[in-house]
Length: 83
Image 1: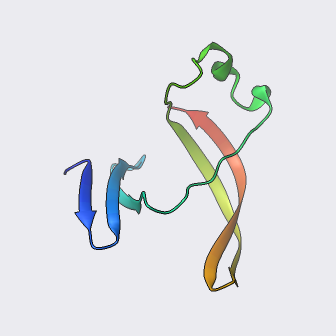
Image 2: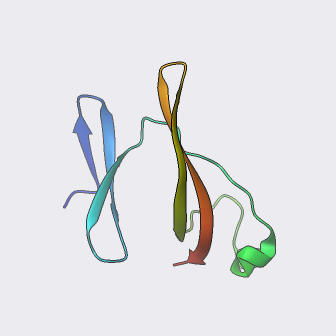
């Protein structure tokens, strides 16, 4: 499976889920940023600024809405785990 493929809407990147299925997501759409207390991911104290790391995020969907013609989805983070 390629890491990236070009589509009519932009570039899609492949990611592997914990059950070994491959999921594609569109990199042309903005992804969220977040911050958490260091006690949520204590390993991050040893990580380097600017370097990329993988996290497993368990979420619960809270809402699906539409604002200004754009669909939005809201999640509550239940668990963060470094991979």
